[in-house]
Length: 120
Image (cartoon, rainbow, N blue to C red; front, side, top):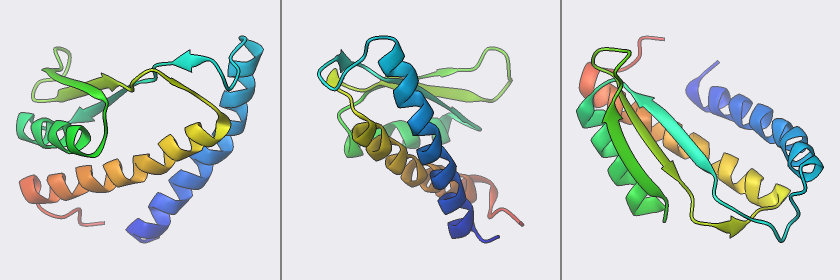
């Protein structure tokens, strides 16, 4: 499976999971009018990779983003953040998931620049 097929496979799985996520949110009283902030995090293999990912997210989104060293794993960094408060629907969740492969690709490009291409 090449990289593009891999990303499409992940995207398809995540979009399918959104059906369950949206149903669970609705079971907890969330409607398409409910204002929510969605939180996220990414692990990065170096401080420079975390800084570049954070810069990418700030450029491409209006998310609040921060980074910190992972105290439990030497050399690892964590990029965390949250979206702005907004009404959420299944379609919005799908759009957010659709953005994830762009971030994954960006992280892979950063990793290639730091440690070389993945031999797979």
